[in-house]
Length: 400
Image 1 (cartoon, rainbow, N blue to C red):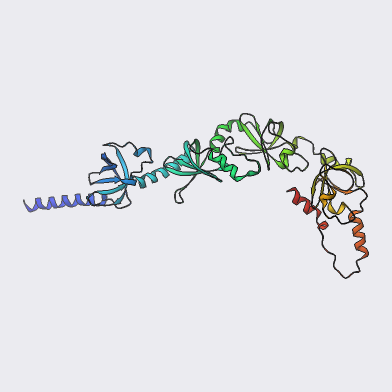
Image 2 (tube, rainbow, N blue to C red):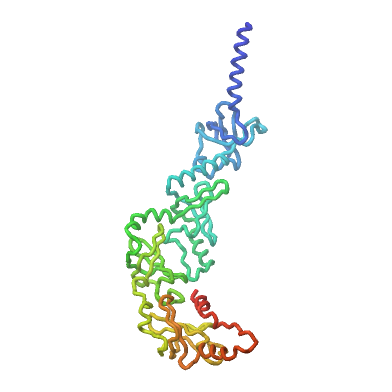
């Protein structure tokens, strides 16, 4: 072989080596190849003619459908976890590459707004654990559609959990609403799918519209009303009636047919009001009740700070404890009972605040006490602070 030929061969080998050298993968790289064989829980892959790779054990990532039915000749991608094992083969993982592809796929699904199926695997008091293809996800209770939302009287968390557990092993149609690969957080929503299906219907409504529907559920915070084509809205307890009530069941029961006004539309969240379809009776309260009038009322609530009294169907008043007797009252429950009727004097009328103050007829009340204190102002002792100094605060606290 002449020197010229030797030089040419050497140059060709150098070029070939450099070409392959830059393509030699490193640990952590994703490589492409074709399946050579699938046997006894091991998959051998030809890595672009450079070497043979092997995937075995938990690195097979059988959770993903794309790796479940591999056969010779199939193109695959895998992650390098060791350049050479005891048999001189490159150790590869479908699991690492598979998870990366799974996260990338979830990002695309969220971006495209696609609907996918996910299985409920477990439940806790905050929501549902989901299997979303190869990944673990979570659905907060708030993201369930209205039909699956666990409405439990009193908000008992144990009963809510029982309701959620009934959904374990069920498949649900969901949308991906949050993907954070770094934190391994995947949040899905069934409500978003429902919102899409109802969008055309929701677009036909606007705030101010009146709807007719049926009371579908009662909770401590309000009443749910079903109306239209599968829609449901919430009437907060403060929007049920103009007077203060302790619980929606005081006014409504499941199955009642009612009319309500839409006051807010927030995607699929619909907020309604029943009371706004009725004139506010407090606008004319000053025409019906004047300071100094004596009225008959029924006691509807007995509290440490006083009595809630129904003067008629719509107007309730407060008789503060300081207006119940000129003598100290030991236990207010011993003297006054719910359902008892009594005569009261009107001592204040505040239409804007929906307040009306009462005093038991014949009782001198606060005015007498203030006069007594004025006569005794020369005494050195400071005037003691009593509960009567803050009736409004106590009343508001009770109303909450």
